[in-house]
Image 1 (cartoon, rainbow, N blue to C red):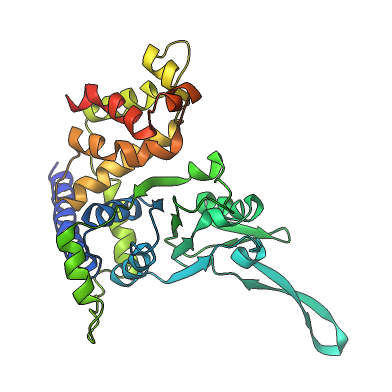
Image 2: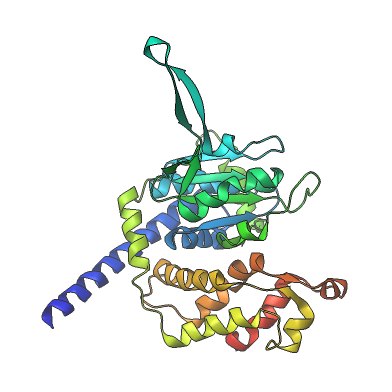
Length: 333
């Protein structure tokens, strides 16, 4: 019994130490990203949960800078891909080139693409064609790519932060549902408030540029991700997650509201994302167990990209956020 107690005490100490270091990481990112505290917390939640995040917002809201800053703070090798209509799958995963060896012999050599990193910034992902977008699918889900019948493992950890511009829709290709479902969270990036924008214009137009510290090493971050999965989730929280996810699915057993407003709903991966998300959010706040507030806070980021509303609901002026807010009401009280 004492061995179990000692093991539990050791995990508790590790969780507390990790939570304290996460506070430093969060403050380091906030020192250069102004007025986006919730966006920063959600991005850290996605990474702690071992997943990917889709950042949706207008241009100029520091989405790219957020990815670069997170790479520095978390000790991850970061690369960026600017998605364009002429981008090809090989530009992402890499390609085979023909080399001439000794005695005139030839052999193929694989040249790795930018996806071989630990934090990939996929800028304006909906600018590329569906064929190119799908090149990320296997990498995001399986953490390896296949070229010429050979599989190549990606570095660990591997995370994708993709951006999507909601304003300029001309020349864009909507992401397929299968790819959207691979993102743990969809993060809405709003405009900063007045005071934050005031700080920003002074901090970013002077001669001195704020340097962010490195808080985590790669192995330490992976340890934090493993610790996140050890945080216990109570039956009440699990029931709330299942209730919320299942209430967003239309069908014979669904509510009248769901059938009238939702054309298709979230699958089981949404429930998995909730479980990872509430654990990560609790640890980020220095708590050792999730609460119903975590479920409510993550409802929009988890569900927004995993469901669609009906034409009649749109015609009545309803939005996906309105529908989710209605579904959350029984849990939020």
